[in-house]
Amino acid sequence: MKTINKISFNDIENIPQLIKDFLDQKIEGFEESTFSLDHFGKQIHLKQQSFTQEQRNELFNELERQHSNLQLSTKQKENLENLKLSYTFTITTGHQLNLFSGPVFFVYKILQTIKTCSYLKVNFPDFNFVPVYWMASEDHDFAEINHFKTENNYYEINEKSGGPVGRIQVSDTFFISEFEKEFKDSVFGTELILMLKEAYKVGNTLTEAIKILVNRLFSDFGLLIIDGDSKALKNQIKDIFKDEILNSSLYNISKEKVNFLTQKYGKVQVNPREINLFYLSETRDRIDLEGDGYRIVDTPIHFTKEEIVNELENTPENFSPNALMRPVYQEKVLPNLAYIGGNAEIMYWLELKDYFERVNIPFPILIPRNSMLFLQEKIIKKIGRLDLKIEDFFQNFTTITNSKILEDNTILKLLEEKEDFLVSSFSQLKNRAETTEKSFGNMVKAEEVRQLKSFKRLKKRLLHAEKIKQSELLERLENLFLEVHPSKTWQERVYNFSVFFADYGYSWLETCLEEMVVQESKLIIVAI
Image (cartoon, rainbow, N blue to C red):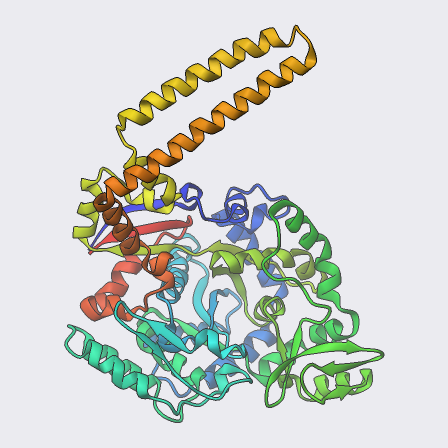
C-alpha cells in the first residue's frame, strides 16, 4: 500500500462551504474552535477549571463498570486509571451502532481520534490524552443502522425496533452465515467471521455487539468506549435537562446562531426543537409541550410540570438527548478537549456555541475527520492513461467528462471561434446602436441573445453526437467513476471495513493510522 495523494478539503468541490470557511477561520466567533496547538493549550486550561475531581471519579467508576465485561489491553487499563488525574483529558468521536460498524469511515474516525491523542502527547508531554468512542446507543432509527455493504453483497439484520437501538437483542443471525460464504476464502476471512460471530451472538444487545467489535479492533490503541444510556452519567446533567424542559433554553439561546448560519449557508443541519429531549419507555419518543403540561408524542403518557420534574429527578435514565443535546451531554460528563466528526456533525455542533456558554461548559475544538480512498493500482493506471488525475473525480465529473469527450474537437474549436467573433461584432453594434433610437438598441441586444442561444444549442448537439460516436470512451469514464465512487458516492460511505481487512488484516489499520493527518482535514488516497 502506498499513499499517492492527500487533497485538502478546500480543493474538493462538494465539501460544504460552511466546513471550508470554518477550517479557514472565516466564521466569526469560531476562530479558536479550530485545530491548533495554541487552541489546545487554552482548551486544556478551560477544562481543568471546569471539570471537577468529583466528576472524574464518577466517570472512572462508570467506565470501569461499562468495561468490566471486556478484555482490556494494558494501554486501556492505564488510560482508564489516568482519567482520575486532573491532567488527563479526552479526545472524542461518536457514531451510531451500525451493524458490524457500517460504512468504513467509522474506522477512520476512531483512528484519527487515536492519532490525535498521540500527537497531543508529543506536544503536551505533561498531560495525558485518552481516545474515546461515544456510542449512540439511544438512537431509535433502527433502519439507519441495521445493515452494511461489501463490494459484492448487502447484509441486514431484522429485529423488533422502536426503542433505543442499543437495547435491541440479537436473534437474527442469517446475515452471519451469508457473510461467511463471501469471506471464508479471504486471507483474513476467518478473523472477520470470528469477530462477527463473537459480537453478534444471540442474546447480545447491539450495544454489547459494537463494544465487543470495537474493543477487538482498537484495544491495543488504548481506546475507551462510553455508553450514554446510563443513570450515573445522566444524573450529572439533570439540571441542564430540567432547564431544557422548563425553559426551552437550547431552542431560545441557539436561535441567533441558527439564523446566522441559515442566512449565510442555507438551511442548518438540524433545527432545534422547543424541547430537545426524548422520553424512554418501551419506545423512545419526543417530549412536547401541551398547555401547562407535557405529552410524550405517539404514546398515552402525559405529565404535569411537577410530575415531569419529579420523574427527571428520580429516574434521569428515562430522559434521552436528541442530536443537538447529545453534544452537551458528552461535554458535561467528559474532560473533553476536541470532537472529531463528519462534516454534517460539525455543522450542527456549530449551532450550539451560544448554548454552551449558557450552561457554562467549554465549547470543544471541532475537527472535521479525514476521508480515505483505497484504489487498486490498475485503476490508478487506467485513470493516468486517460490523462486524468484522481482529483478530477472529486470535482464536477459531468464537466470533466464533457471536456474529455470534446478534447481537441475541431468543430468545437471552430464554433468557439465564430462565437467569439459574434460577441465581438455585437459589441461594436451595441456601442453604435446606443447612439440611435432606444428600441433599435434593444433589438440589437435581443438578436445577440438569440444568436448566442443558437451556438449554445449547436454545442449541446455536438456533445450529444460525440457521446454517441465515442460511446466506448464514455463507458470507460463512467466505469472509472464508479470505481472511485461506488453507488455514486464516496467509497468510505458505502463499503464496510471488511472489504479491506479481508486482504490486509490489522496491517490495514496500521496503514490507515500512519497515513492519517491530524492537523488538517484531507482526503487521503492510497494505492493497493
